[in-house]
Length: 400
Image 1 (cartoon, helix red, strand yellow):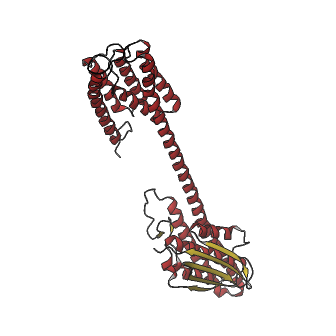
Image 2 (cartoon, helix red, strand yellow; image 1 turned 60 degrees about the vertical axis):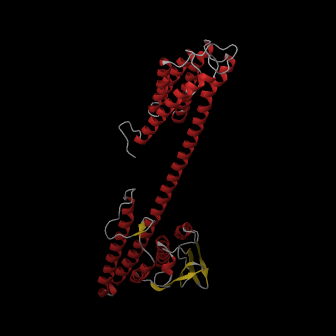
């Protein structure tokens, strides 16, 4: 929305100007009607003790217009506008003009102060306006007996103030709630990115460490395998750095959704590198180069059951599980099965031993996998069974 130098939206200025013109018209027309049917001279009834009501004349019209048209800048300067309106209304009543729509100007000004100003400032401004308006009661120029005039004069200030203060508090509460939701989303995003970095760096470092141990082992015993081991270390490092760079690039993306760097796919709606079930064979080959035999079975229809976020979660579960097998049980065989089951995708990673795939069942590896899966409405279990240690995850089907 376009704004002027004062910072107030043009649409709001136009709205306030329209309101001021409408109130001015209503006040003039309504006052002319009210003085024909109100107390004092004219065809309407008169209060026995009321002074004569002054008919609306040129000074009265000036006062009505001054109070009404000042509302055009009510949201830019709420307190000064209330002061001008209260002074005009007080003068209008002191001169003995009839009660009427003129008091609507006061109500709008009081409401604006209560809606836009802090309560201490708004209370003081509303109290000052009320005292100004009540002067006509004290000085005896009210068109109604003073006891009767006190109630409506006070109501024209108290009621709009209560409404404005209520609206302000509800808007402030809603703003606080939105801010808290933003903080929670930011915290969740930071945690999710931290998990991504953990998975990328952890997987890469474990693979490099194992491959470096292999290179050291074959350096003397089988020198011909040394270049192969070093090449595996170099390739794993490049792949890990590329994936880490893709993840960190997302932190620097602008809020409007700036595209990632060329060659960096992203999972739609997740803000994360677009890895999925199709990348599992390459992951298995990297793990085999690091010394872990991987038996991989992926159902062809599994990818159709998951959206990008689900595929990324499935990939990360397999990656974390295989990384921990490699860390704790190098040289063993890991069996990975991805199948369609119960309207979703079942992921099973089992090692041919009882060593924990993700460290201890309460460790950070399994805890991170469980949190990632739970975030998508799935479930994850881990523990020994049948002479194996298994990680079993289920992700709900969310077709693309």
